[in-house]
Length: 423
Image (cartoon, rainbow, N blue to C red):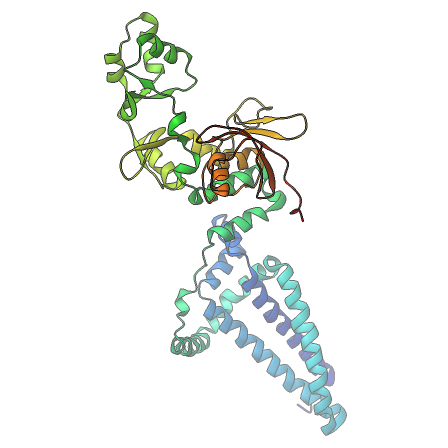
């Protein structure tokens, strides 16, 4: 080494520092790649992404290769720096070389390149992949030996390196991804995606039409009442029952009978024959499961029953879809059929209003982990049927009882939510 000019040694040292920066930055870039974006780019046949994905399939080999190269160039750089320091300063130069080289490597081969790689992982990782693929083939025997020893040590610690596949996102993590998408996903689309994720949290009881509000055809009624209901019904499918809603004989599609009704050829017998067998839904069924059940059974309406077979309500495919896309309405001024906006800014709300629907349409935050209706929420809170004029505060919403009956709250007035709890 004494015959080698100092300029050559300095040039070699500089080159080794560049190599060290390459290994350090590429390691950070490879590990910082967004795996989901990487999968997307692989499907798009991006050359750098394909090679990077192949390398990350066996991260132990990739890390072994990078650390092998990085440690090799760092040790070689340390040796060259020692030689240069001895020739310039003698024995005292060893300490100088150690301090200076540590500072240089830390700044120029570690912190700076790794920071750059963390900020722009794809710009660093994809070009580096073109180098690592052939380099891995050349150094494979050494890398394989290193990986085998390292994996053996991991197994002693009960760590399975082969289980290093891409981790799946939980539902809450996916919610965070959607919420933080910003301008990448329009706000309306974000709400729809969140609505899909929230289907699992809700059950058919949360959105069903209560038993008392079900509109159906009682074939024991007078024929004039039945024909008038068919002619004026706003619903396309109606339950047909005998005397009581628990005695359902079928679901009638109004469109199938209007022609016969117009010609005067319709009677109760024909109506029962045209009705389709009822479809029953067990209470407690999650909305995501029921959506698939409707699709599988090719149904659009189901009767919610309890463990005794009694009908509790009615749920439709439209009800579930509204949980995802919002209300289907052509009246922009209508906030909810159960809500009446007052001039003073308050809202008159019927006691039968569904709490979950109120939260969705009015952007309120009433508790939904208990009763399904506003009447149930109030009576549970007070543990009694309140008198008219009673005031209470639920979830920071001032509520005044406007009208009651002997067994239920009929109408309440809800003021805008308080910004903080009153003292």
